[in-house]
Length: 356
Image (cartoon, rainbow, N blue to C red; front, side):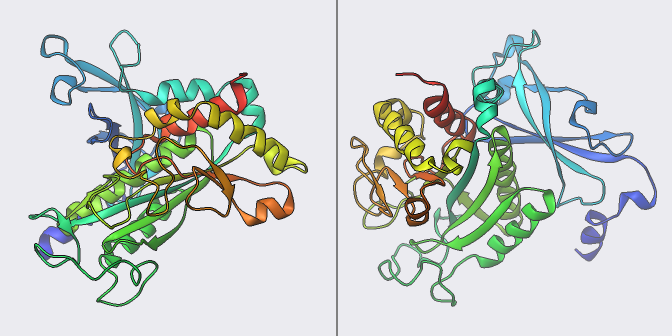
């Protein structure tokens, strides 16, 4: 095994200018991350210099067998924490050979929103709080839980330390450092309320980059758990009963909200979000109704309410924002399996472009 490790860790730059580019895209379910690698003649830092590529869409649920070719367009480059050196990760989106975005390409519509002059002028910032659950691979039961049984009730696990309370920290720490290495704007990690559940935060990131960074962070997490022999679940309610679900709380601000008098802008934005509550909920993740029950730090899925420092609200405004009269707010409705391209662009569209 030591020889295998040595081979994996070969520094290519000792012998060749060539690099490996791992192309990453989202498959047909909207949550399955796909990837494949290719050799490039030398280091690349400009995404426009990367070649387009293709894949068999009939094998990812994105094209029929008789016309299966899907084209992937490189959109952003990150450093590869697995191969290191000059090797790169490339986040892509998917198109037909004729250049039309395929139906599961959510990035294309998001990029149109974020390139709108009114949105660009507002410089929208996002902070995405990605919760997830680590599962024992062969039994699909949370890490640290007794097989076929349950741990003690919630209380001691949130932000905990200790072998009887914190499960999977090596995976979490490896992911944290790998994301920083990759150039992702990851801003922190913490243990969550349910044992075996964790969270990382991406941001503040501007516009479309928030979605790119979260998807690559998810990819890196999938790769690390693959190595560790653990399964990562983004299900919004992985364990039924008196256990917290998993969300992807979305913190948001615009230039106007961050300026003096921004609190009034925030209140108007929240009012608009309330008017489109059903449309947002429909786009905020599969199975979210199992999580948004009005219990376990959530508002009921059919109810829209906001409050200061209220974790049982749809939208939470922080004490600092209220005190300073400017800042950001948190949309607590998105599920852990939400598509960040959809959620971030929808919030910008509703709060900036939509004129009710």
